[in-house]
Image (tube, rainbow, N blue to C red; front, side, top):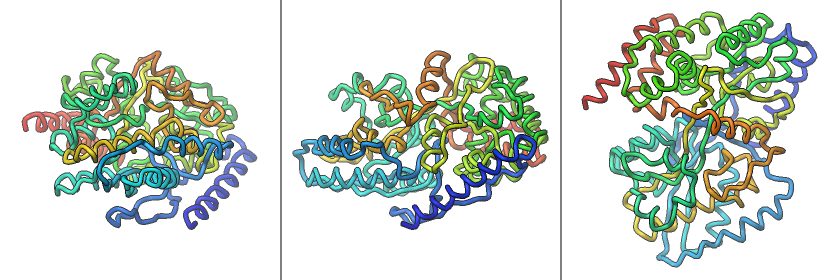
Length: 479
């Protein structure tokens, strides 16, 4: 119960701070976003690593924490129990699953129901924070100790396990079980890596700029439709005493979400796609100019003080407390805020005004150990489909990045997640590009992340960063 108590204390502080912010008006926002506030930490059940008990998102993501269930959860839970028996008729199997701790409470209950309904299957789940699961999985891959299945992202993050021969090639299994008509084409495309289907897609995500409508209104800021208008909005908010954008540099991926938008604006869709697929040189004007805009934002103080060392899992804090006006997030942010007892009354979003209208996108998936027996794979797939079913999402709607990437997915409830469907529809209409830390191999992404810090600290110039990134790409390609 310690976790719930800490969450309630944090939520009380948020409500109080938001009330003060609304009483004092536009001119008295804080320059110092509350990025130093930490939620409680608890050990995972995996390898004794300690991870932040906060709302994480992916590549970045992210995602959800809390106790939130739907109003008629009793009837919804009956629906979960009705599908829990998957009719498994194989040998008894023990399965291990590594997953995000921000979805722990719902997953624990659902896994218990599944195990009780299927006496010949026992699933044990270990939980990690966003970056902890990346590190633990890579360590396990190198030591030959992968779990039966694990949560992962698409792109280069998932590709690592294909390239190193530790993930099950699901291509034939997918054909035999009609996955083409089970999962959405966009999601399947993002989990098809190295010529093989490398996992079951569990979410399809797009990123936009969440903003506080009350702060915008108080400061007379209109939703920007061009990068120049966005620059002006940031300047106005800063002058009024607010931090324009809540961001955090620890592990790199949250700051990267802004830089890739700046580059999209300079490069345009066609050139940016070539940059993301490493077909075009990153030592180019578009990258340099995009990094120069980032440098200007750092110099103008558009980000929180000390943001480079802050935890990205905590960016919601300053946004919720009304000290920061914007946060670049995916559609899971509706749930992240609600799971931390922050109402969405004064929260909306807009597509980043990057000149193309395209949104950054990525997939999440479950990957499976290549050494699974036929019975183990059958049981692991059945568990995954149960955990990411419409019925499970009805009971714990804020634990999922909805809508589910299934052809039979229930529509998103606008009363629970008011911004989600609009974000998905916008991405369908205007297109997407692959988020950079899924497009990049890890060793290249690390160079970008290092230079983000160096530029922010005044230790490097944008042109030097562009050159170094391209050198890392060429080194990777020469391997």
